[in-house]
Amino acid sequence: MAPFGVIFDADGVLFDSERQSLEALRLAVEQVSHGKVAFSPDLLGFLCGRDDGSIIELLNKSHGLAVNTAQFRQFKLECYRRVVAGDPIAVAPGALDLVNSLAAASIPYAIATAAIRAKLDLSLATLDLSHRFPVITSVDDVSAGKPDPEIFLLTAKRLSLSPSRIIVFEDSINGIAAANRAGMFSVGVVGTFSRETLSQARQVIVSLRQVTVPLLHQWINGQTNPTQEIGAT
Image 1 (spheres, rainbow, N blue to C red):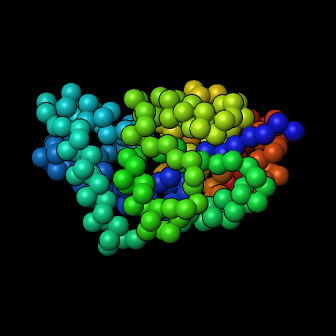
Image 2 (image 1 turned 30 degrees about the vertical axis):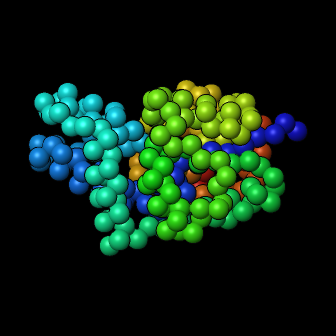
Image 3 (image 1 turned 135 degrees about the vertical axis):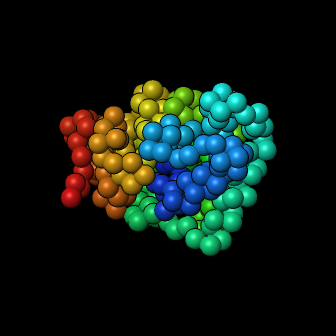
């Protein structure tokens, strides 16, 4: 049987941290835009999962700002530190069990996140998971963030696997789009966005607790129907 691997997004997939991440993003955007930018569902859909450069490009063009991406990135990181200090993040339900199952079955896995490495390292250290992910790709490693597929294609190379043999777990519209463009098997995790919003994913789940190694084998080997929703309630 041909080998396959798994790539996880971080915030909203491996970590129950999307609330804190979005709050840090909101604070940073409001600060650098001097209150000119108000968060809305449409804006959230565009920004979530994107790299800071894309966010700043939008803000500068749409609101006549001249924000420096590096400064924004650092400011957003500090906002995240403050938010997490008062509202701690947690490991997402089922995430650690799934990672343990992958390791036991010798299935390679990795993280590919639109976050900067400093933020990811902070989250991993906070949750005592720094040693669990030998393969990590952050937005620092690529020239274009999600929905561009570069981050997933680079991670596939690091796993020494063909993109077609990789399952990606994502919670954002941009992440699903990037995985699909990379030719990978996309799985949407409901939470940040609704089931309907994630409908472009090959599968939609409500929690990683639903995922088993046998189910992964079924998915990657085409033994389930496309766009099937798992665990709807």
